[in-house]
Picture 1 (cartoon, rainbow, N blue to C red):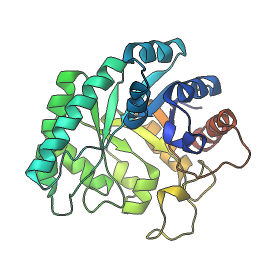
Picture 2 (picture 1 turned 90 degrees about the vertical axis):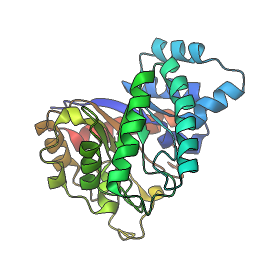
Picture 3 (picture 1 turned 120 degrees about the vertical axis):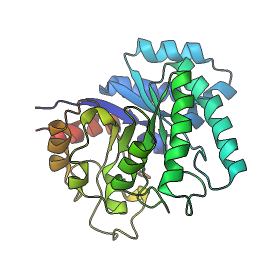
Length: 274
């Protein structure tokens, strides 16, 4: 049984240097239902004369949903001026994403956050969520395992609850769970409707947890991540949303972009089937 939907984070296609429309075509032809676009790729498309409405039609014609977007805003930065610039950038980019029909956007601990308390994170996330929902976008609170703060699932759950944001949603990523020391049991009690999206990937036993980097991520099932147990935990929580393949590999040998995307689907289904 496979109760989840399939999505492709376009970071996975980085070695191929594809434009955003080619990313969409590859994801659709491979059989994904959703796609996670990077804001920088959308902006590159617009800079070359593209139009948001035309891109939206292209995505819809290919049967995809823009499940989430990847952006980097200093929404919780310790410095008030940097934080305000982050909110200004967020507003501009979320308005663009809403016009594209994007459902959500990731909100990781980007910026200078080493001395930001979790309660300060919560206050900033409440402000970000208010702005996002007014525009028509859902912010997904993301923790980064190697961040100075907000680096584990427990902290993300605390921030989401302390923010007071109704039905605040968290982005789950096994690589960040591993690098930040989160455990599967930390997911227990988190309802599926509080999980925004799940990035899926795997990681090898070496390099060590302290030395491993994003580029070391591998396909689900090719490393030591407890993918099957994570799948069961998600299903038990009632999560039926997207599993989105997010890799940062430098090369896939001689595989084409389409072959890589198709291999991703096969790997996800094998690793996350119940």
